[in-house]
Amino acid sequence: MAFFGKKQDFELEQKPKRENQTSISRDERRTTNRTKRWSLLVAALTTIVAIIGITYGTISYTSTPSFCATCHEMAPEHVTFQASAHNQIKCVQCHIEPGTKNLLIHKVKSLKEVYYHIVGAPDPIVQTVAVSNENCEQCHSRNRLVTATGDLIVNHEGHIKEEIPCITCHSGVVHAKVVERGINDSSTYVDWTKKNAKKLMGEKFVKPNMGTCIDCHDQVNQGKKPWKDIAYSLQQINQGKKQEQKDEIVTNKETPEMKAGILARVLPENTQKIILEAIGQQQTDVKLSMECFTCHQEINTPENHDINNWSQSHGEFAVKELDQCLHCHQDSLWIKKLKKQDIKTLVTETKKKVTYKQDLFTVTSVARSNHFCSTCHAYSPENHQDRSTWLYDTHRHNSGTPEERKRCFVCHDNEKPDEKKGNAPSDVYCDFCHEGEFAGDPV
Image 1 (cartoon, rainbow, N blue to C red):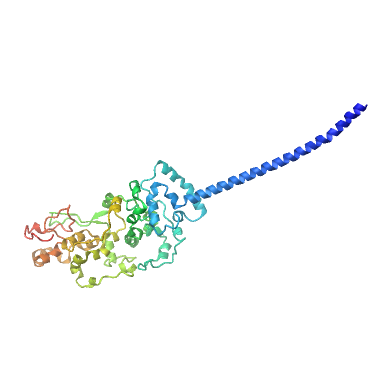
Image 2 (cartoon, rainbow, N blue to C red):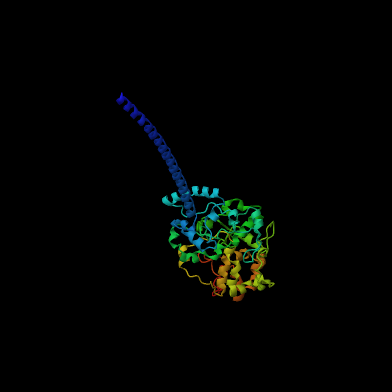
């Protein structure tokens, strides 16, 4: 009995101990579970923060100009950016519409650029999405009536209300129209260095081109709104000579009286009409004036242009001051499309002030190729209209001496015209009738 009692007492002593052990085990499990949950939560939060940080860092880094510079195919764009007046802002401030949503969408779409970089980028790279007015207005006010130089009157707000993209006029403000000039393909990358930036930029390619203003105004006068097609505002790939030939038309025809030495007078389409409007001589159906002084405030007609017989005597001034004439009357001012350039020439050539020989031959050569001069020189003077009177009477009295014949040689050659040597406005030449009589004349 005593033994039985001891065993029973032992069991009673052991029972509470097991219950206490069970109680401790449960507390430990609860603590362990709580620790695990907190660890998982901390790990998840850390992962989320890390992902957000990496994403933000990636977006921030890929939005910097230095990131763009890491791709060799972006050399032309990056070098011109660095040399431009916009070099203190980020590329995304112009090329992505404002807003976080637009930024994220752009980044996703830009993944294809990584693919192109690996398999081969387009050659040349061409902008396909125009910079929006909203981007420009983040920094610039639309309430501007005069350009920064104070010379041009330009109603910016009026243009914006017509939904004309800022980029239509300011397409070269950062990248100097490298696409139109044909100097941004893969063969040019090695030449796009900070050292060459100044030579490759060119002030006239950064500023708005007057030819763009004239072309747009001319189309408005025809009842068109060219900017409605966004391609009009974007830079087009310059195809060189093939494209130039496509845009040119013949404006004179073979005369039945003379079939010798015929040379076609080739001028860009509509150039004569545009120039005549600009100097106020063609005003039919003109909705927007293109006369110089409609927009220019500081440019005035030179005093010598006011001479009564200016149309007859301007050649004498041109011989002495041809560089001054071309300051206003050079072709590049009147034409929207730019000529294709050779980057090697731009890099190696030393820019010098252009000087012209003060002789009739030089002036005649320029007058024959210059579109402004051709608005008049491509057509016969009024005193030539009655051919019989002119042929048998007037021209004999007006061309008797070398000095008198100088005017004739602006349009006519002494000898049979040679297509390879010049572009004579007329197919009539002196030697056809007066063979050898005027040997030694200047042209």
